[in-house]
Length: 487
Image (cartoon, rainbow, N blue to C red; front, side, top):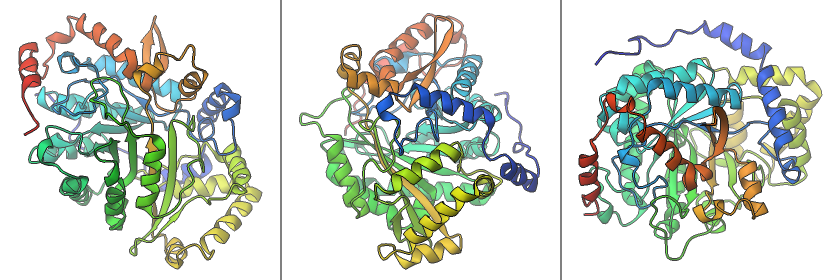
């Protein structure tokens, strides 16, 4: 197999120069322009002080990548024929990445997804191609996150290491929950509760620690977790497991719990759970009555999120933002003036320098913000370890929240249902799709409802794609889909 990537890590300017540039220009002009356009496109009622979309991010993008996945989960949002669809060409994926970059501006999160792309590229013998895809996303100024169930990476850690070293991958979203059928050693029929999967979560934690130690490079995870009637009572246990060891939450920086949606090939619960049910369990797991709208990402019916400060090594936690509506006006001022600031980790460790640079440019706002934060973290409600660890630089954040996808039937009513239309218009999870020669950002709920099938039809009618190696022939795919993974 001919390598598309170099055997050495990507070259980078000296760390001091990168940090200095981050201090001098903490917010890119292009990012500020794209954010302004996004803010003005939001429904007026969503332009609130605590709205993050249009102030801090445009949206998270995604690629329309390889649709194959070796798992057969009970809650899969892809069409039934996903495993029969050929992998798009490298040129097509790069074109998608470029389109996402234009729609998002610099520094936008880009999910490398489709089905399980790590699975698909490794099993088709095109692993080098995925490395090149990740590297290209980094090169154009996006922040790629690989979406995966992770089985291929656990079994072939050398592939993960190459993605990190040669591709520049720094973020992975690993889906681990009881809905999954196909994880080796953990058959779905024998998993009785989410605690049975803690060894899987620990294996990924250990893998990241080994890669970080061996390469000296950053690697972080996000947990993706589908919540159904079967596992909703286990959500607090999963959160407590991560919070029990600050090393885990230092690796797993986001815990995303997603209420089941009746779309794709999902086997829907007879008594569907609600987003309110899930948020109640999240609060139970954290041990705090978290406010759902302390910050709003797009539409409040779609996303609820809370960031926690975690002190090391004690593991004490405290909400990053006060549960106080009086704070909303200051948050609004911060987002208006410096919301385009990105604090995403990188190899040069620039987030503190970007923060210092933007506060230096707004001294009055900086003074107000520092005073408010000091008063907050030294209040009687805050554990003393939070302030002490903050002074020593021994704190990190953990995002805990919920992303609430819509049922396909809901999305189909968008033209007549104003709430559904508002949710789609304000969506913060959109990928670039080419329609009539023009690239547009399509919400994931619309992808699940219809657009994936449109994309699949186009690929099935492209004979050039079939000239490249694929995972399975059609006959092998049908045989695999008949196999019982439940025992």
